Image (cartoon, rainbow, N blue to C red; front, side, top):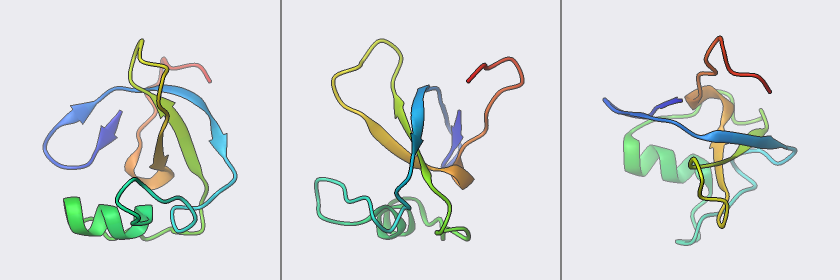
Length: 79
């Protein structure tokens, strides 16, 4: 579950990625640090932490990468 604004989105965790938000680029060419700053106004405070590779439920054709600090893992969620 992420808290990027006033909405909640649920993902299935695939794995921890060894790359940091500064090392992962999205389709626009931005890295995740710049993307979260521009799109959501979130300044990542732990850019050295790795990201999590996730998928929207039942959509396994394209992975998403989330910085750890924007994620909340629910108590019941098993990894």
